[in-house]
Amino acid sequence: MRARRHGGEQVGNRLTVCVRPERIRVQDQGDAPGALRGRVEDRAFSGYVVKYRLVLDDLRLHAVVPYQSGTPLFRVGDVVSAVWDPQQAVVVPNE
Image (tube, rainbow, N blue to C red; front, side, top):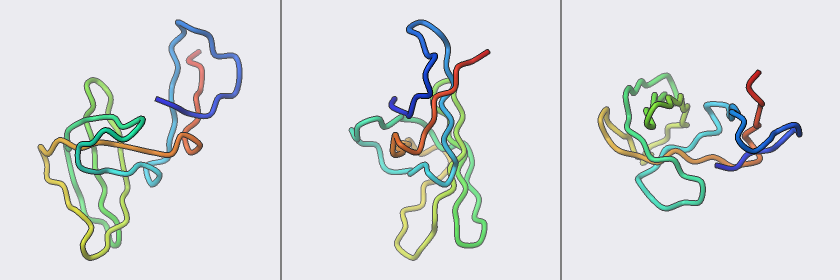
């Protein structure tokens, strides 16, 4: 997983990667660089966006995806990939 660093990170230390839900793309399983594979736990329409809750091993992500006609809709239980631009993610050392 790639993200912007702020310094102070050390090998072996636990880190948190922060990325805004609207920056996460949900797509069919694939081998995109940095893609995390998981399962759709919940889906909700909210106006012009679809909100997904994804489970990736012990990690849970919330993604907010713009909806337009033709946008693929994933169902609860579907296996998908979560992807984002590394410049949109920030590494924060755990205290």
